[in-house]
Amino acid sequence: MAAILPIVGAMQEPTLLILTALAAEDRHGYGVMQEVERLSEGRVRLSAGTLYRALDRLVGEGLVAGTAEEVVDGRLRRYYRLTESGVDALALEAERRRTQAEAALAALRAARSLDPPRTERAQPAPPRERARPAPSPERAKPAGGARRRPARTHPIPGT
Image (cartoon, helix red, strand yellow):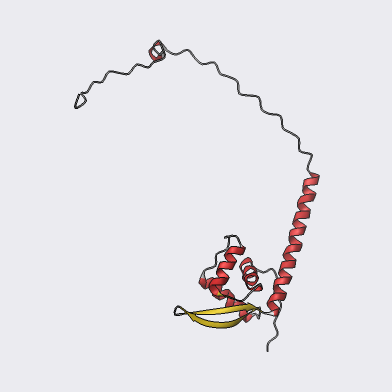
């Protein structure tokens, strides 16, 4: 049996999500796709081709293993599980990301403590009212505020 080499560098998000989907239970491909979408809150939607290429790669790396096959509605359904190496790789990546997230949050807290205290900004003065020119005589409204309508110059049928 060939030795399994640890994953070097950061794990891509889809790989992390696939391994996470398989951490709790064995799943078939479509079940993995649904769980990845749920875990990512809809941000990651794997196509069947992308998923099965990733699963083939993860099987080759020894992180995932096929467990069973069954035919459902005339289609072959393969089930996958996380191997012990897959559990270890997922745990390492989760810890790496947790450490990075904590460092990012600490940096944000430090940056906020360096900011000058936030004070209420002075409210801008209300806009000045502009003097409006007096209406021209031809645009003046008739007494009583009613508008004059121009007389109709074309006949209306039925009147």
